[in-house]
Amino acid sequence: MDPADLRDHDIDEAADRGERMLAWLESAREELDKVIGTGEGPSGQVKATVDANGLVLDVVYGPRALRLSSHELADETLAAVGAAAADAERQTHDLMREALPGYDPAAAQAELERLLSFE
Image 1: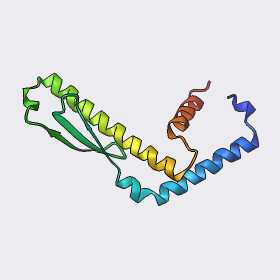
Image 2 (image 1 turned 180 degrees about the horizontal axis):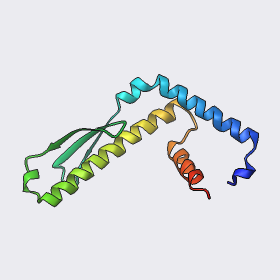
Image 3 (image 1 turned 60 degrees about the vertical axis):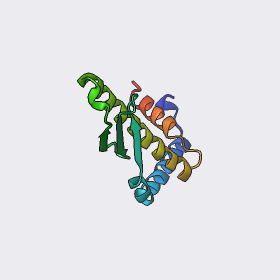
Image 4 (image 1 turned 90 degrees about the vertical axis):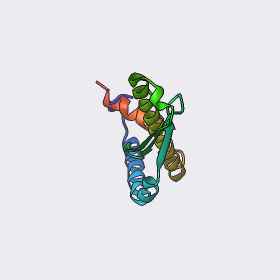
């Protein structure tokens, strides 16, 4: 989309969506604070929890985790944290879709990235 092709209606619609999103964020803060993503590494020996902001809350190593090499353990830890972050993001997107019917967070993010990269 060329910015020169934007109509007043398009701008008004985007502003309305933004206002609804901000209102939802204010009212949903408590719900978002309860989002906890969980994930584990491929071996199942590393488990992680992450909040909606991506903050790692916990990492737990199973009894067999010590048998892994340091590189394998690092990879397992990163995989567990990544899976937990993806789970938290999915839960957050589910809350957004529930509160804002027709809103697609992934499509909105892709559109924002596309607009920001427009040259």
